[in-house]
Image (cartoon, rainbow, N blue to C red; front, side, top):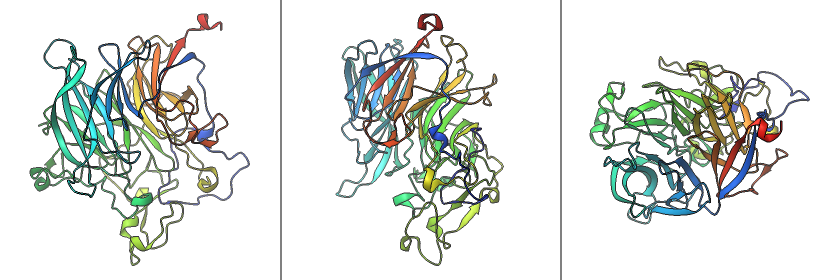
Length: 470
């Protein structure tokens, strides 16, 4: 079954056909394992939800612990660790807040006076008893002698955050800018179903002047290293802001290719997880479009606009919204800057029974680009971690990097929630961080919360055919 042209679902599934075939199955339960052999090793355990894992110039893995509030350096050879920083003002109470993204300046440890490390984290902006989640980007300077991060400097502050769909991935671009992903804050969904979705809203000139970042939801932002708005950022609706792209649901993976192409992994609703090629000023459709604009089944159900019955009088039902909730087909929304995804996870038939077969998403979080040659055929492949499937997926790119070549393959299936990924410089070892709790699939594709390696860093090392006896 192709993995493009997914049928997605947020508010309602359109019955385009009748009846399920006897072979109907959740596509997430079917794996296409790659042929390569790997050994597996547990590098470190007992981590507080390791969220970001990045290979550092010192040969250590730099890790943010979402619920531990620490930036930790881990020796991949023996698993010993050293806490470089504990962030004291992190706020965390749910699975979408806490200490999130981390990016290393390319001059780190090169004796050039730019030993900078950047983090993104959620904090409580209300000094009283109430909780007002905001997100902050902060810069630290690494003191190699003491192995600690010091001299905090806030770059961008008071960005909206909430209890769901927080984004928070941070990456240093080849253009010397920082890129930050922001989710839609879970609006129009579950407990937040009466909150309007603002992924399509753009800031006004007055809001930018007032440093009101309330529209920085469902966006990818681009900021200068001092937190300011770059002069060459796109002008959208006549306004230049930090907004680089719009129309995102929950992008939690960002990576640049050596040639400057920019990729993102994004959570879909009940299907249509996306891998997107990110381009300046473009619009990726959410919430009007999930995956491709094909009307195969996704309908945007706008709960906050319910009339005459107000939204708060309704009970949220993802499969069957009441008639007072406005609904719109994907084709009803047109935008000159819309960009379709490179690939979606997963394709389901038009008569797919979400109630019986469950959601068909892998919940991608981390993404990286394999550029080495140690593993034959892997060069220029995107690697994605699946939290809901406990697997890593390899998406081979076309030579120009602007399309997908062939079908994705799966690797490293375990009963874990894979959060992020790092690749050793030689390309032989792949490191994956795991959540310390949550739901995934076991070896029989059954839903489970009993994780095999909670709060860990796992290493998968490539075994060439000769050494593996094949």
